[in-house]
Amino acid sequence: MDKVKQFRWFGHYPEIIPREIRNDRYRSLSDMFTRCVEKYSELPAFESFGTAVTYRKMERLTHNFAAFLQSEGLRKGDRIALILPNTMQYPVSMFGALRAGLVVVNINPLYTSREIEEKLRDSGARAAVILSVSTGKLAKILDRTDVKTIITTGPGDMAGLTGMFINFYARRINRETNYKRIKGAIHFTKALRTGSRLHLNPVETGPDDIAFLQYTGGTTGTSKGAVLKHKNILANIEQISAWMLPGILEGEEVALTPLPLYHIFALTVNLFAFFNRGAKNVLIADPRKISYLVREMKKYKLTSLTGVNTLFNSMLNHRGFSDVRFVRLKIVIAGGMAVHKSVSDGWLEATGIPLCEGYGLTEASPVLTCNPIDGTDRPGTVGLPLPGTEIIIADDNGNELPLYTHGEILAKGPQVMDCYWNNAEETEKVFINGWLRTGDIGYMDKDGFIKIVDRKKDMINVSGFNVYPSEVEDVAMMYTRVLEAGCTGGTDETGNEYVRLFIVKKDPALTEEELLTHLRKNLTGYKMPSVIEFRESLPRSGAGKVLRRELK
Image (cartoon, rainbow, N blue to C red; front, side):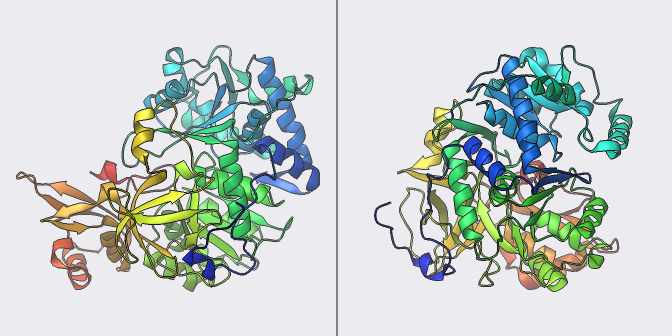
């Protein structure tokens, strides 16, 4: 912009952070990759199952994978599905695909055959990289898709001798349910060997080319493919990098990546933004195994960590977490879902490091706001709009509301997508007057800090009064004998809505009556749950969000 607009939140930016960003530093994500490889060549880029790969070696591995893809007849603009957890194969496949000019379609490897088929058919993917132990799910639906090139891989294929044991264990526990040989599929390591003997034809990609078809989590409805162009992801990388300036030291960071890279939060914040600063990403294949995660945390002198509320809560409640020593940890970012106050307070007490909450969504690549990391964060808010981002709170017609007034959060910025994939109807619904409708209810204070109240679609109407599930969950989580909470609305036989609360006990002796006593002290009458159900666990998305629609 020739002239930077002035916003109330600028007065609360740390001094080092620019008000706007450069969005012409790189032409594409492939261009960024090439320049980072040159700049940080001898530094470790990723580590998985104890095996590290340098930036220089990443160049060679991705060259080989890209050359193999071209040999299969895949051309610029073709879609490739990555159905992978956080193993070394993910960044190699992803960067290799981008270097070949392909569009990456991220798919949760825990999805059912039906869910995988839905994404493959909608995207028109012509290739797929998938774990060998999950091939049974792909085999069931393969003939109803356009996928012709299939690359299979064991989770430990790039982890040396340790990887052999990892693959053996994975095959043993999955053989009966998910494993199936697919005719014509090629193994990942063979694909790399094949590509090493081939020439990679350079592919020119630019800002307006599509980089990812990133499907929305579907936590509130049907999943849709957000079209994220190279310029959208690059803008968010620049925004995040600028925001981290008070704490990031180029070439010296060690970031733990427990959230799945197929999710946009970890993809942009951990993989891309930290890669752009010469950091090492330590990849955690399955963060649900908290004992393993905590053991890994003890091995590394971590400087940065990202996660979601449920993950931080699980770590805090693990008996081995108190033994972790955070001698270098300085940046802890939470996103993806609301952070409960009990978790935020507990994290600060246990580590001495504030849990800085941010906010975004798939359609925005994803980050829109974040709390400052220089110690001026405001717990309970999702922080300030990032450089180059505009946020307003609006009514149903898109009219801006006064400060402190609850309304829908609308956003503008270079990180915001243009459209959904092949879905003009949903695209029209998600934009109003040029603003992205986030579907989240919140308010802005006089300094520009934003407080999320809840999802618009999750709001419960009790006798004309609005009840926000996150508030009920937060109050329930304040009780020390509660481990997890999920809240939804129910409908009685007369069509009236009421509040339902689902609880996972921390103390098996917890009773409904004592929990109700606690809730009555902290909630007004119409917000009180009419039904409390105790569960062994709550349904979660791949990124750890509690799936309220499944609770319903």
